[in-house]
Image (cartoon, rainbow, N blue to C red; front, side, top):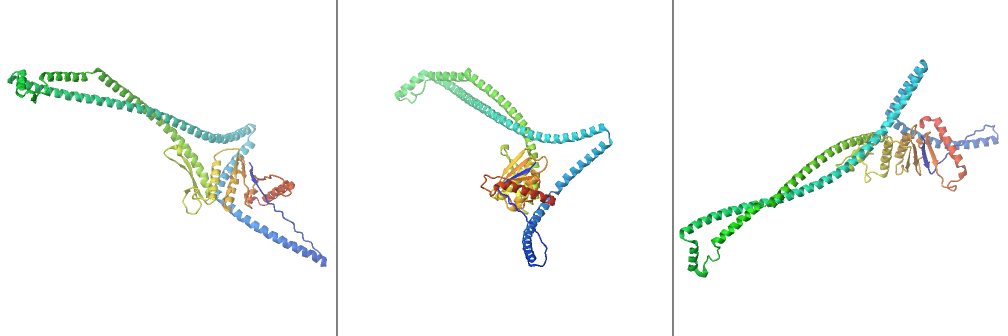
Length: 471
């Protein structure tokens, strides 16, 4: 798949040719030689400029060789895979040459099985991503159900608490009435006993009515006992209080309400226990789903961290991607940690600490690592190289080319207003530069622009044939 670069300007350098003419010692020949010498001097200046450009390219190549050494392990693994595939292919070809036609069909079946195995791996990867999405949806549904159950549990608990409070209130009132009844009974018994004693003593002294008349005669209207109740009144009052006490104890309405409140409280407690058990069961299922979801997320983040860390190390930087967990999984986050200086510990990428260029480098490397895990037909980025210094921009552009060029890779569009000069990665055969012209007045001789672009691509193709390692 091609890597297409849209750019606003392309500079083209055209080289000349040097011609040296020989002649005699005549003045005309001398003049021609002097002209040739001047041409040679101009050519020397041009060659010196080209030597400087070559030196810059050699420096760029040195950086590329360093990057290639960093990725040597990955290349060796790919080479081993290729060698293994070649060995298997050679073995299959030997079996085909040695066997007859049925064996050829077996070799074809083996090749088909290998292709099916590769397709199965791709399908399994896609299935894993779908399972992750399905588990996330199940987790959200389980959370919604749990919230609803919590609401029901809260309502039931409130109802049970209200019933319990009513029960306690009735029980407290009944208990107060029982205590009051017992107190009144005790006072009644004590008063009755005291009355009986006093009555017996009064009998000994004489008739009660006569005693009252005697007191009245002795004291008259100023008697200190005139406000006291008579014995008959006391007996009537005691009988009345006893009847009231007995009616309180034996009131069937109070007893019925008390029994109803006790039964309602027991039913509420039973319902509360059922709700608690149901909530615990659903919490257990929710916990199992959450564990599965977290395990898949952690696996995906671990793979993402491997790619991000490798790409940052190839640029002589440090980097890591971690899953940030909190008490509520809705606040989970992915943290990008970077270190751009030797010996500096990894720190979370922060706009208050890291510059715009550093954040751009971390962002594009994170996208490259993420793209290794996700399949898409094409990708488009806009001005991703803005704010970077020259070194970072060259390395980032090289990483983009390596990740996006090759067979079975998605098409990649990079839109940018400018590019650095001498980008070696631009010479890759899968990279194509397109210059967007908004009108014929933006560029001089725009009618010849197509011809100029064809000559530029021809020169790039020529450099690739002369120096394949630079590509």
